[in-house]
Length: 492
Figure 1 (tube, one colour):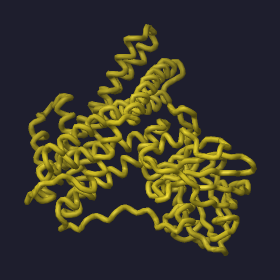
Figure 2 (figure 1 turned 30 degrees about the vertical axis):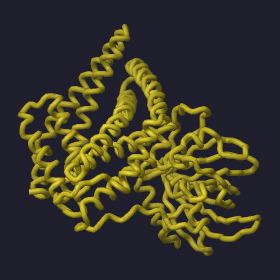
Figure 3 (figure 1 turned 180 degrees about the horizontal axis):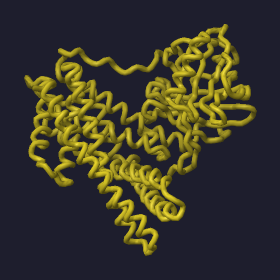
Figure 4 (figure 1 turned 45 degrees about the vertical axis):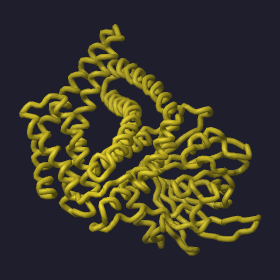
C-alpha cells in the first residue's frame, strides 16, 4: 500500500485520507507466515460492521463503507476506487449512523436508497512489516475472519494481504513469490465483504463478439466509461487525490470520443446534446486537472534547486495551490447541481439504450474515418508547426485512439498496435501542452512579484519550458511517422 497525506478536502468535516495498494492471496487453515526480514506487527482484533443498500449498490460499485471498532476506538471508513487502487477515507466518530461527509460523497451511488448494516466481521490480524534496511517496504498481514450474525459465527475464512508502503512492483512480486512458496495461492478477487455476503467477484462485462452489431460494441464501451466516471465521482468530490479527478476526466473524454466516432449510427440531435453536456463537464474538470499537473511538476522541479532558489518557487506553488482550492469549490458546486445529476442520468440511459439509426457502417469504417482525419491533420501541419497545429494533432490523435478502442475487438492486433503508438504520441504532445501552460502560469505569477530572485528563478523555469517543447519537437516526427504506418496497417 502506498500511503500519501493529502491536503484538506472541502467538505463539512475533514476526514483523513490514504491511498492503498494491496495484493491478496488465499491461504488454508494450516498456512503459517514464512520468516520475513522485518518487525512483527502488533496483533489486532477488529470488529467491522459494513453498511450498504438492500441491493448492495455500494459493493457493486467497488465501494465499501464500514464502522470499525478496535480497542474502544471507533471510526467510519469509506473505501472508493482510485484507478486500479483504492482510497480510504476515515472519520473517527462514535455516532450510530454514517456521518454526513461520507454520505455527501455517495450521492450518486445511493440516490434515495437507504443505508443499512448488512454484515459484521471480526478479524484477528497478525503479520510482519517487511523492511529493506530501515525502509519499510510493505506490511504482510494474515487475517482470520469470522462472519457474525445475531451474535453467532456463521462463516470463517483466512486471507493474506500485502500492502505496499515504500516498496515498488518488484518488491510486491518478490514478496508474493515468497508467500506462494510457503503455501499461499491465487485469491478470487473478492473483498471480505463479498465473501461474507456470498456475492460473486465484481467483474467487467465481457466484450461483444467481433461480429456483433455496432450498437452492441457502442453500448459496451459507453457502459465501461460511465461506470469509470461514476466510480471516481466520490474521490473527485473529496478533492484530496488528484488521480480521482484525472480518472473522471479521462472517462469524460472517452465518452465524448466514443460518441464522436459513432456519430454515423446515432441520432444527430441526441448525440450533439449529450456531447455538449460532456464538453461542459470536461471544461471545469480540465481546469482543475491542469493545475494538478502544474503543481506536481513544479514541486518536482523545486526538489532539484538549492535553498535560495527553492523559496520563490515554493511561493509560486503555493499560489497555484490557492488557485486549485478555488477551482475545487467550482467543481464541487457543479457536481452538486441539477445539471450534472441530469447528465449522469442521461449517460446511464445512453449506455443501456442509445438513440441509434439504421446504418450499414462497420466498426472498422468508424475507426478508419477517425484515422483519416488524423492523417490529414498530420500531413498539413508542415515542417515547423505552431502551437495550435500541434494541439490539433493531439486532439485528433486522442479521437483516433478511442475510435480504435471501440473497434479493437473486431480488428484485433493491428488496432491494438495503433492504439499503443497513438497513446505514445498523445503523451508526448501532452508534455508539450503542459510546458506551454506552465510558461503561462509562470509569467502570470511574475507580474505579481517584485523579487529579483523570483525573477531569476522564473527566467530559469521559462527556459526549461522551452527546452521541454524543443525536446518534444525533436522526438515527435519519427513517432508520427510510425503512428501513420500503424494506422495504415490497421485501417488501410
